[in-house]
Image (cartoon, rainbow, N blue to C red; front, side):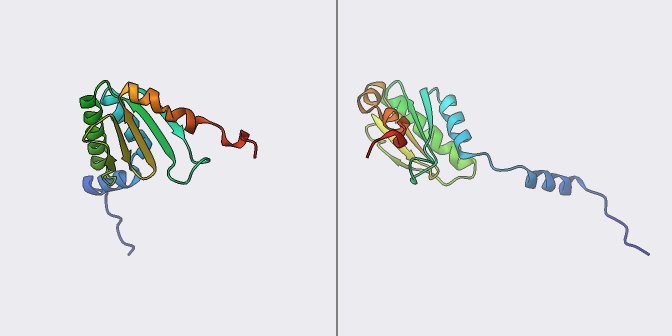
Amino acid sequence: MPPVPKKATKKSAAKKTAKKQKKPQIIDIVIDALENGKAEDIVNIDIREKSSICDFMVIASGRSNTHVGAIAHQLSKALSESGYDKPRIEGLPHCDWVLLDGGDVIVHIFRPEVREFYNIEKMWSADFNDIDN
């Protein structure tokens, strides 16, 4: 007599559904956290073809030192809660320019004046293939 197949229970169905769901992409978590933190002028630059340090560089502004620090803390918390390692953070004591290294994504959060001064999105948005040797 052949074995009788087991009926799927609620627990086994939930496990199968959980296995099918993938961990959200880190870039999506970063953009959502920045938007939820009311970061301004968010720029996402795909640098996979330009550098081996990471896949994406995200640049955003906060309205003040306090806002920049709050955005950085909120982003760090969002990454940790989503199952990613806690990012390395630089610049929190002054919060003029905070850098979060999330591995595949590096996030720069500036006060507007500091962002304008350094203008790093211009440098990373350039097409390096057009440079003459």
